[in-house]
Image (cartoon, rainbow, N blue to C red; front, side, top):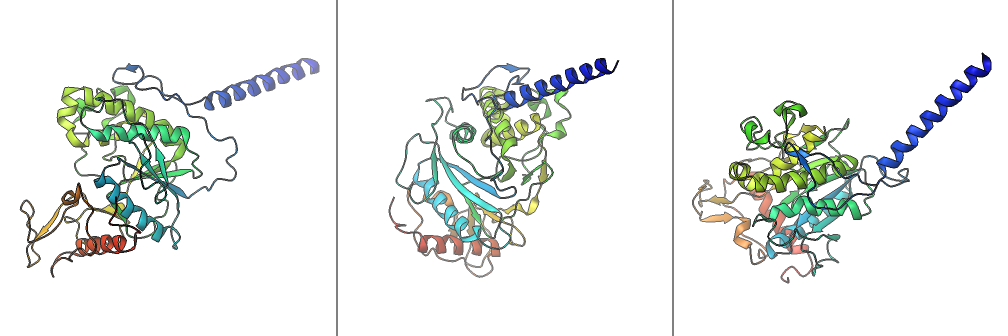
Length: 359
């Protein structure tokens, strides 16, 4: 009987060891960089698995890597230069858990700012695949970067060129959840019938889809490595779907990220203090980022003239083909703190970035 028990224990021990080995080997299979794979009921039936570094003991556990996707246009490039300037100002300050920085350049070729900004060159989608919606290159660029780059940090902040960091950013994610800014115009419940094509009912309630885009989001690197290929596939499938394309428009890729995150069971802390968006948000308060996506138009009495070009204005779209000049005029008295701070920070960056007048 004793020998029998010993043999039984030996078999069980060997079986557990074999199962564990198979799990480890499966988890370390190389990432496939293919384009969209097979779909089943509107969502990925199989996701590529990304090989993780064998030795993770030397990696920081709470610092995060900031990644910004960009084209090589004048418009995107000057924004990235300003964004990176302010990243460097805040990185080493108290309270910061900001680690490395990468501009993911999805033009397919190096540009003249490789020495100024740490850059990874990604390939764009094949010609015509984005259907004129250049933002579709973003998830594909992230897939390439996550596959090929040596990212030391365990977390990633996905940011954008038109973000200005106003104070040191800590790692806001915790307990396996991402930290994301909630957008009022991302409304999963409103568009449930459309989203069910990509997030079937057996995946859970529609409320599992958070009202977020991919930026700003701080998320674990391992989670993002799972999400990114799905994000790419869902974005392309949404663009090919006439109803989804019409309903989601310019925020289609944002919905695709929210769906991909939910498909992989990665929830998010909705962090309203992540950023402000002038001119609607008037005070900096405890926010970390200024997102200058909207035009700021005022008369000389400091009154907002939204929808009408103001006597004083700052709109990034005024500089699609040229760089903003140094020393932009400050807003008139009465304009909110957020707008005044934005222009002052742009001016400080352009005054200190070497060779600002060149492109």
